[in-house]
Structure formats: C-alpha cells, structure tokens
Image (tube, rainbow, N blue to C red; front, side, top):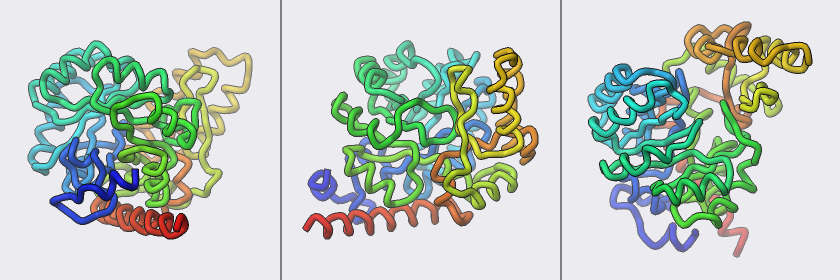
Length: 330
C-alpha cells in the first residue's frame, strides 16, 4: 500500500493519501461521507464533494420524486462527483433504481439488502456501484455480481451494524476480493484513516464525523450530543430483533433496552417503539423519543466544523500519522 500511495501523485494535489480510489471516483481525497438517513441530504453531499471527498445523499425510505429533487439540488450546488445511498428495503426501490439511471448518478452505494438485481443495470448505465458489506461472504457476492468496489463496515459504526469489528474485517475482505475495498466503522480522525490504509483499504467512509458539519441539516441538540459524548456513550439496541442499531445513550435507548430485555415484550411492540425515532432525533432533537444514531468514535469529536475543514483536517492528520508510522518502521 505504501508503494501504491507513492507511485502516482494527484494532478489536483500533492497529498500523500492519494490512492487508486481517487482516480476511480474522480475525487481529490479517498474520503466518502456516509449515506445517513434523515442526515445526508443534497446540501451536505455537495459540501463534501466540493471539499474533495465524495458526498453521498441517503435515499432512505423516500420515494423517487423526492430523490429526483435532491439529485437536481446537488447538481445545482456542485459540479463534482457525488453518490446516492440506496436502502434496498425501500418500498420504492425499483422506481428509485430507474431514476438513478435517468439522472446519470456517478456513484451508488447500497445497504440493507441484496443489490444483485440492480448492479448489472447500473453498471451498464455507467454508474459505479459500491455495496456496503459486513462480511467476506457478502463482499465476494458483490464482486461476482459486478460491483465496482465494496465498503467493509465494522460494528463500531453508527446506525445499523454487523457483528464484526473493523480491524479484523477490513484485511480479511481485502484478501477475499480483488476489487477495491473502502473501510468504514470506527474511523473518525487521520489516525483511523492511516490505519485503514495500512490494512489494505484504498479509502474510507465516515458518517459520525460529518454529523457535526456546519452544512448538516440536523437539530443542534444532535450535534451537541456528539460533541459531549465520551468513549462509552454509545449502546446497541435491537439485537433481539436481528438488526442491531448503535446510538448514543439517551432516555430513549434506556427505555428501549429495558423493554428489549423483558421477555414478555412482543417483537412487534419493540419494532413499533423504534419506528420514526431517528427522524425525531434528527429533526426535533428529542432525547426522550428520538434515537441519536452515532458511532463509537463520537468521543473523538470535539468541535463543529465546515465539511471543508473536516476533510482538510482529516487529510493533514492522516499525512502526519503516515509519516510517523514510516519513521517508526525506519
């Protein structure tokens, strides 16, 4: 990886974290902003793309008309590449898949389902498809289906998570597939990015760090909770339902866990209890009824910044960490 990083410098910058992902996606830095429901909209995606990363809009459970409007908005705010995250359990997913082709979206990331039925259609339309995977098995499946790359996401991330942690997951996925691997989960500063590169990844995806971006349209209570969080301030809920979610500890998560640990609580009650909780957190900042999804790196985040300053800080930190690592090896 070190030799790959040094073989070719970007025509846009002289950063030592130039990787093959930069050329693949036509971006300046190998940093993707995660597609977070009720968080990642056109404004945030454009700000990240304009700063040299890849901004991504979350299609969440929205319909195709809402998504088309967001695509038009991001195109009006940036002339740089951007992506759309497709939640494959979305009831409108078939229509959304067609809108992405019609709008010539540059990059698609996928989650919460099997993208196999869409990958060939999207690739044929010239779209780069990058599924999020929690295991080597799903990474191999994505490669066989024709994916451009994969995002190997560990359970330290915020929101819906898998079982494996990032540190063991990423190198195993890198060994399992021949397509590029992007690391995600538990990465919040340049040290984490440097570590991901050393594990064999060609880039990273960050979600929680961008929750506090100036351009992120969420309630200030949400941002303040991230800033105030300590290392042990996230918790997993929903494990009994088969789809665990990592979020900040709040009155909501404590109540949810109490109900979840009560054998007499029906699963239907738990599912209904959590319905709409992320929207309430993001839009209303209500800690009694809202679920503030966030990753374990929340404790590393100490200030709100613009998306541009976040990326420039990450790049500087990564270069410092890589140089320090090289000096240590010597």
